[in-house]
Image 1 (cartoon, rainbow, N blue to C red):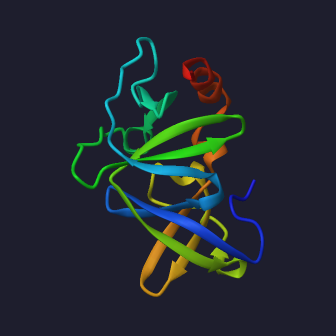
Image 2 (spheres, helix red, strand yellow):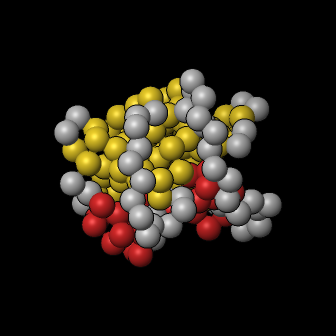
Length: 156
């Protein structure tokens, strides 16, 4: 499923390993500074645990570890993007998130078939604006069915 629908779209832009990614603002509940994360035993390493977000237990995953098999080193710019996928809420740890883009549907190009990145299976398209390239993520592919089932058990 394409993450972006309609003629004009708003996207949240975030960075991982120097690359710029985008997701539909419609999926985003909030962008938070790093919160205390409680580790949950017997979960994949990229599932960092859960956070208490205004009284709601929310599972958190490290996107850098999911994509690049490197743990995120927390800095002042590190953020947790709270997203809604299907019927669950999950936090995505990213290096930084500080941009909102307005784009037209015709600015989204199909995902390239050959990309020198481990992320290629999660891409729903790319957006070229001026000298910048944004990778549009398909969150359903980022969190496959097995991940979703596991994350549902962590939700409070």
